[in-house]
Length: 101
Image (cartoon, rainbow, N blue to C red; front, side, top):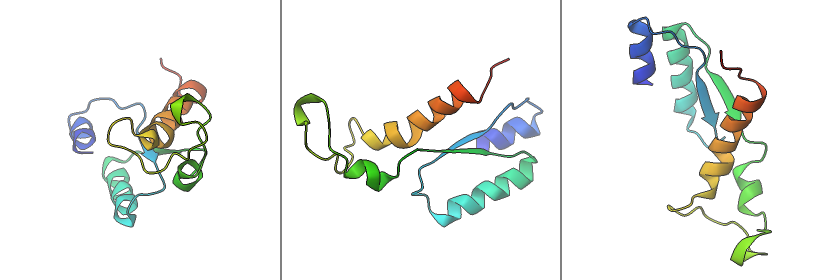
């Protein structure tokens, strides 16, 4: 967020600000986002996954060597929640909403 504030203060143009909301954030994070929006005078676009953490946690794997097993806790290497909770919603926004100039 500090980079964002510095960009605004230095007059660097900002097209869109994205926040991948996992639904697992602390309440203080949402309050902080609102404070940043007020300070920079710009809306932060929040993108969210189609499924919750719990939906994916208990979902059975359909491919690979672990077919039939639930996803379970994300590992530090190959964390599935990073993919489902952040990368996929950001990529979906990029493909369907955001148009680069």
